[in-house]
Length: 193
Image (cartoon, rainbow, N blue to C red):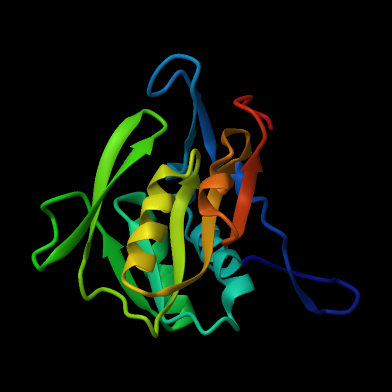
């Protein structure tokens, strides 16, 4: 975490990191009129990643989270270190055929089509307090599927945390009354918003 030393008091103070500086906007990817929000510059910075995990965890530190649940692939990048930060288990949600044990499968709609996700049938229990995590909230299809998979197994979903939210796509609506924490929000496809 970056620090500055005040020259008069010799006190260390935490520098505020603008995480948006670590997001690269790429127009017309994966198709025309889409502004892709690329997180790879963030992944390249250890300081930025440390700050992201700290900020994702902050509102949930006292929520007694027992499991952090994330979908592949980019959800894993943030979900596993967030689980360690919160002292919780990490639960992977994967594409069909990737998990070796008995699974529950859910088909869902995406921004660009449809897909399916699976979770082990013993991944979470009714006593679990789950935090859902992904890199991006767009239409809410993927995280909505994760929410449904967790609740089908009886777990209490405490909240959902995202590095980026594309607010103009209204993904929050798919999550009902779930507490949502997003670090960076874009209100349009424009690169600067």
